[in-house]
Image (tube, rainbow, N blue to C red; front, side):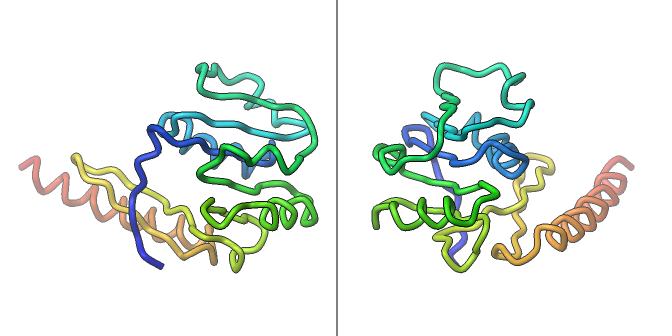
Length: 153
């Protein structure tokens, strides 16, 4: 994998799914993407309670192929393996897909970012273990906190 940061300011992101994983992905994207469409027959209540800008659309319906038409980046985050696979199959070769149910079908993985004194440090298990990534991120944060204490003296 080639680690990069993406400028999504003028890009459209489509998230298929409205549960916890979709919410987690959305929270990282909501201030980054030009347009965000979230397609799901049901939504986690956090989506419904979220104050949304005009660049964010909740589309309450079952997924259909046309939902991907203007997407640059696609995230499949349903609890239905058939729907997730259909999204992957429907995506055009020019669209980047994060298949949260099967990392082998993902074009990219998200990283966990740690911000420290104007720096962003990213850590990723390349989709293998979010739990292990969280553990290492906590260790890195704790280490960085000790450096802050040294700088205060």
